[in-house]
Image (cartoon, rainbow, N blue to C red; front, side, top):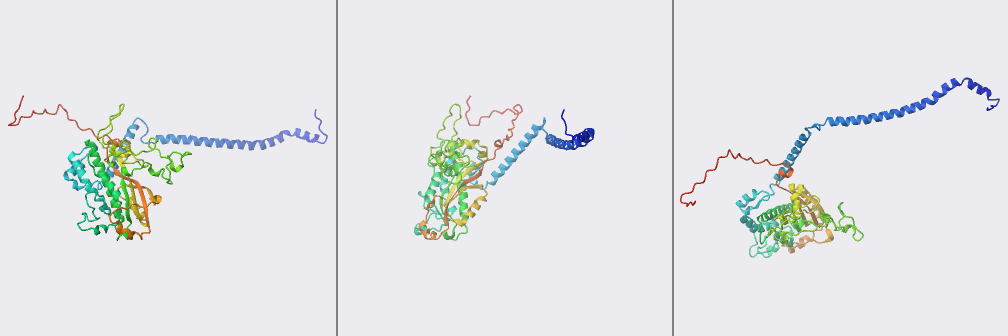
Length: 476
């Protein structure tokens, strides 16, 4: 037994005598804080659990409030909404098509019978061979009117004499020096003019009627876009009093469609600043600015040949299908690389036929290289942006490569002195797309056209046999 010192034995005896009262005071003082702390933690857990329960109940209630509620009739309501959206899409498509009606004006020089036939032509329809030949023989003269429409002199060469801008006639005999002293405000590179004329001057038409019709329709579509840009350039110079204050004084290149399509869209591989986010990574032997751009299948884009630009003739004979694949359409080569997608990548004929976006709008690429007063560049871009036909300028390059703009139009020698004082001129290259509406199609948006009414065969009276005409010999 432990022996306690004599001096603390009285205190221990006192504690032993009154220990109950002492513990009744100390135990609550120790347990109450612990009890309150435990209760607070439990309350927090209860509140958290209640919040989770309320959120789950609210989610259930939100589902119950959905109209229509997912039940047996839900799919019917969803299908009805889908049909409504398709109809709205078709209505907007129709509005887009009708809004570009002013652009789709065929030249009246082709004749009333041609205009009647082409305005009623349906997609994948065919024009009469005589009408196609008339377009073939008439369209080169219409193309020769583009320089005057722009405000430049025609310098396309050939047997026809050059026409001063704005006169609409060849120079008269003895004009001589007056021809060289043209009053045109700008020049259009003669080589580029001849390139344009050659794309519309066809020695022969495709033998296949479908391919021949497609060639005429697509060529006219290009001609409309060329005219659109000629009008834009003419508007830029409409307030000019002469070459000294004209906004644009030289057009080095104007191309749309196939000639403007790029093997490397966006300038990939051309030491540009911006790189597409999908471009392949550079290797040790290939610097970043020279990495090739992958095509639709991951390979490098390679520009195919085109019948109107030096390729094989279209419609001469379609290759048969291989291992069950269908034969290539006779006009497929004419549709190669004339349109691009929204990223600027050229589309093949198959892409044009199958892509939902390409079926609703044709994005035709363009390139415009010109010499312009840099103080008027913003006005030109604004004019392009507010054009009634959607023109999307994707690239603007100023003095690209430091190259001087090409010239070659009539009257250059007479304008050399006037241009010497144009210290604000820069060479600008514009690239982008023109959005052309296509014929609205209910099937393309998922709306099936109504089935034609089929008369009851039993209710249809039998046809009477034709009577032989008098004077015609009838044999048994």
